[in-house]
Length: 113
Image 1 (cartoon, rainbow, N blue to C red):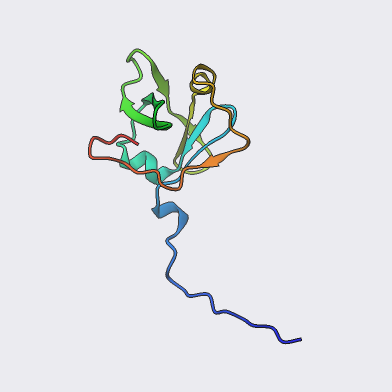
Image 2 (spheres, helix red, strand yellow):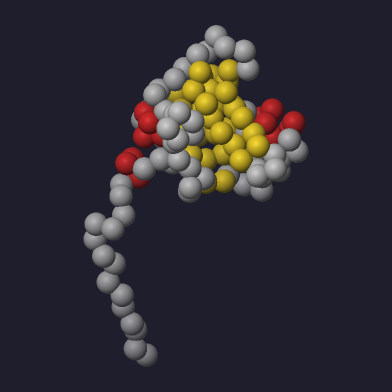
């Protein structure tokens, strides 16, 4: 039996702490890594927005005292944050089978994630 090996190139992949990483679980916990949190300006809270026709979720940085603000709580050993947004799932009838990773998450010019 002959085994074909392929060489894994070095340097093609960025370390996980240099890219924006966002997940959401079926309990509505939206987790941002430290990079994502820094790029949106390290706010104390977020407005959670949903666009139903396109099934898009957005997080807009805001002050914790604002109406409808979801607090950004510390998560993990590093600078990650979690936003508990179960209401988003219930009000828009969103059912997640498992934790979803948003691989194409990006921060726009208005610091909206």
